Image 1 (tube, one colour):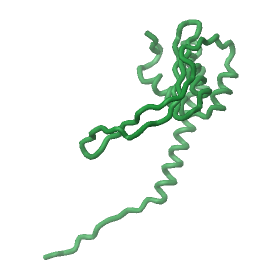
Image 2 (image 1 turned 45 degrees about the horizontal axis):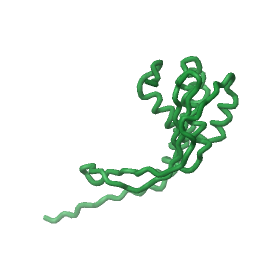
Image 3 (image 1 turned 45 degrees about the vertical axis):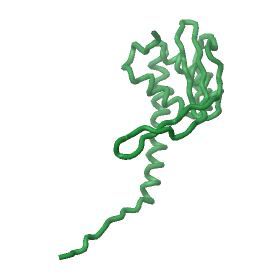
Image 4 (image 1 turned 135 degrees about the horizontal axis):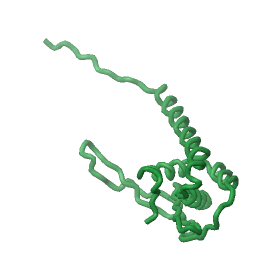
Length: 153
């Protein structure tokens, strides 16, 4: 089983989410700057397809099929047998492969801490700042509606 035994369970999910939202140029630069990269074997080549997106409706949260979304995915393995996966919204196969390679590298206990501090944490902060800026911009246009109660006595 390929699990990240050196960190809590949700960590891999977190770094994959961060990598999927990262600019492809940053991923390429981070992997180019990494010393002694292992040879990667392609398990599933980068490919583009559709996935069904589900939503929840109403107060009950009943699920429904919202529609299809284009995604690209890739799976690689390094010489030590670590399996890296990459999923990204859209048609960017190169980015899916870079995410898969980064995922395999992050599973290596020797590389994990360095990549966490030099790649994942800075990207997570940038993504959070961009989300906060977008939320602040949206909040500036918020209109509060209220109803005055008329006295009907």
